Image (cartoon, rainbow, N blue to C red; front, side, top):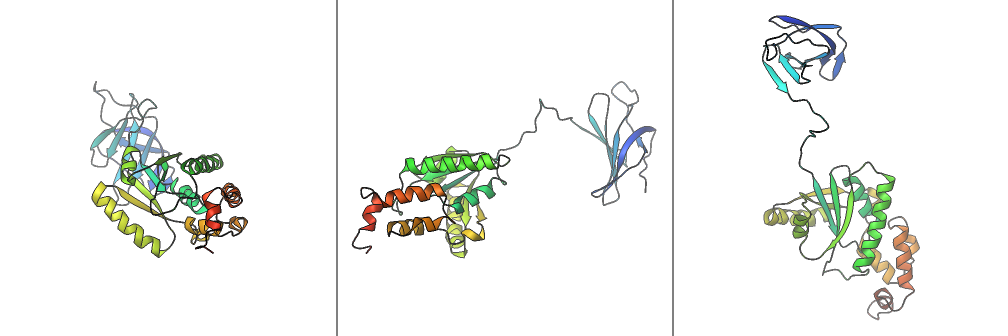
Amino acid sequence: MAPTGGGNPARGRSKGVRFGALLLPVPWLRLPLPPDQNNNPIHIRHCQMHLGRNGHSSSVCPDRSGRDVGFTRAGVTRTIPAMTKSQPMSRHEHVAIYPGSFDPITLGHLDVLARARKLFDRIVLGIGHNPDKPSLLSFSERLSMAETLVQQMLDDDPDGAPVTVAHYSGLTVDFARTQGASAILRGIRNITDLAAETQLAITNRQVADIETVFIVTGEQFAFTSSSLIRQVAALGGSVDRLHSIVPQMVIDVLREKQNDPENPLGRLVRDDFVE
């Protein structure tokens, strides 16, 4: 099946005919070419003919000025500006924030972050203060660990979206606005998470006009919880057994705090209410 066109034909070299996603080689095609601004015929060196699924044919061929001139079977033409390095395609950058207390950061958090790097142009991991959660690690400790672990991720997989780490206080939606984010990223482990996060996502959309993107974590992290990790460490449990859900850097810090009676973790271990 070869496409044809009316009018005065000009001869052009074709790379092929495309049927849907299939490109078939065709040595020569005759295409109706409009004259240039000086009413001179346009000489075509390379053209490509496309046959759509609806049976209509079209072609895109460069003229002398380097523009791409498109043709249809009905003879209607349209001009497509050529893209150059000096004229990059403009588009809105999709930025997401990944907020949380990260006290401590877990392999489940990093798993969600790694998956999100395939979806957004830039991600900001925001370490916030949650008044409902007793803090185990200071802002500086959480920030330092997150920065180190994120940098390791970027080094291992440089092809994904860039990630920066920041800490904030106040409302998460205000932090998102300052970062120019269009979405809030949240990890989902189970149906309980989904129910709670859905209510919060609807509230944020109504109040701050910002969307929430849910990413289901890997099945090996379905029961990973920073709160449970803090309880295990505070009750004197072996933090080395947490290696499957917590980075080694976090395990080392928890072990140091277990052995230090001057930090909050040590006081929790000897608390009579805990015992």
